[in-house]
Image 1 (cartoon, rainbow, N blue to C red):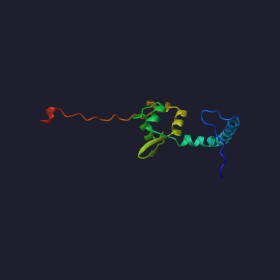
Image 2 (cartoon, one colour):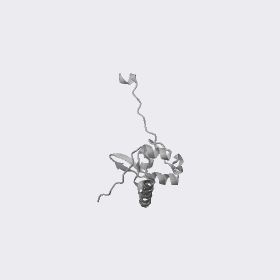
Image 3 (tube, rainbow, N blue to C red):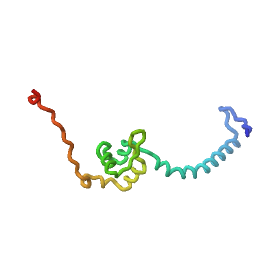
Image 4 (cartoon, helix red, strand yellow):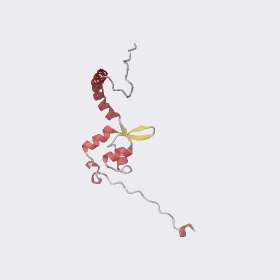
Length: 127
């Protein structure tokens, strides 16, 4: 089904008022039809959004290299693997933001022994 396209004025001439009114009405109708669809998809967008480890740590205000891996290992934050990289679902970060990060303090965390560093041998011991 083809519609006859009304004659459009060249770019340097103003559009007829009737055409502008018709375009505005069509646009308004499309926006009305689109609003419920956008509202229905909003929860899904937040749930499906995946954050990198860096993004999640920044949003939570915690260390990416120490605290976040500890939380993941202790299963306080759930992750998914995408192409071999861990990702944190946005709803997990939002849950932690709601609950607060006070439970992550050092006082509530069992102390891990510090990693033992090997000392380099002294030159006299090598001879």
